[in-house]
Image (cartoon, rainbow, N blue to C red; front, side, top):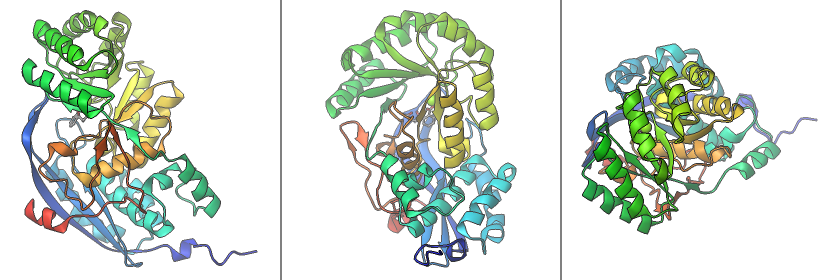
Length: 390
Ligand SMILES: O=C(O)CCC(=O)c1ccccc1C(=O)O
Ligand SMILES: [Mg+2]
C-alpha cells in the first residue's frame, strides 16, 4: 500500500538559485599559532533558494596554510555552480557535489553541502545532525528512521577552549579563566623553544589543576629531536595529546615519535582528504584525528574519515578553522550526530571573532555547547552583520 502522507522524491525541493556573499571579520585579539598571526577571518556565505520557498545556508572558510585552496580559489569556482545546481532536487544536488569533487576547493564543498543539507533538514523538519545520523542520506527516510536517528543525536557537546601562543603570564591568566568558566579541556599552542615551552606547559598545568585536560598544538613547528625533548620533559604534566608535532608529510617521524614518547600524537595538518586519512592510518602515525570539516571537504567526507579512524581504534575530535557561526553550527551538527566523538571538540572559537554573522547565539556553558535543535542547520544569517563585514 502506498502511504500518500509521506514525501516522495518527486516532492523534493528543487534548487532555484545559488547566491554567495564574501565576508571579512576581524579578530579583536589576534590569534597566534606556529603558522601565523590571524587578525582577520575571511570567507564566503553561500545560500541555496529552493522551489519550496526555503533557503539553505553554508559557509566556505578556507585556510591556505593547511590545504584545500584559498579564498580566491573558492570565489573562482562559485560562478560556475548556479548552472550546475539549479534545477536539481536537493538529493541530486548532493550527488552532483560528489561528482564535482575534484573541481572544488574543500571549503567550497563544505559550504555548498551544508547549504543543501540545511534545506533538506528544513524539508524533513529535522536537524542537520539527525540527517547525518541516518544510515543512508541518499534515500528518503521513513518517520521511524528519522525518529531513531534523532534519538542518537547528542543535545550538548563538551568543547575545549584554546590559548594562542604568547607570553607565559597571559597564558596563565587565560588558563585560570578557563577553569573558572568550567571548561574540562584547554588546548595550548606551543612553539619549538625547549625550556620556554616546557616552562609554559608547566605553568599552564599548575594554573589548571590536575583534573582539566590539557592538549598541545605545535602546528608542525617541531623537528623530531625537539618533539622528543619537549614531550619527554612534559610526561609528568599529563598531556591529553599533541596535535601535529612534526611537519604533515613526516608520517614516518610521527609513527617513530609515538613509539618514543608516552604523550599521544594527533594528526591535524596531515589530514586533508580520505586518501591522507588512509595514509595516516596505514603508517600508524597518529592515535587521534583532528577533523576540520572546512578542510576535509565537508560534513559527509568528515564523517567517512572519522568512521575509518574509529574502525582502527583511533579517536577523533572535530574543530573549527575559526570560521563564523554558520560553519561552526555545521561542525556542531556533525559532532552531535557522531556518538564516537567523545573527546572535547575545538568548537569554542566564536568568541574570537568580532561578529559570528548569525542571528542566534551559540552560548558556551560550563564547557559545553548545544547544537541548534531547529530544523536544518538551525541558524540564520544576520543580514545587517553580513552587510557590515562585507
Ligand atoms: O582546536 C581548537 O580548539 C580551535 C581550532 C584551532 O586550534 C585552529 C584554528 C584555526 C586553524 C588551525 C587550528 C589548529 O587546530 O591548528
Ligand atoms: Mg591543530
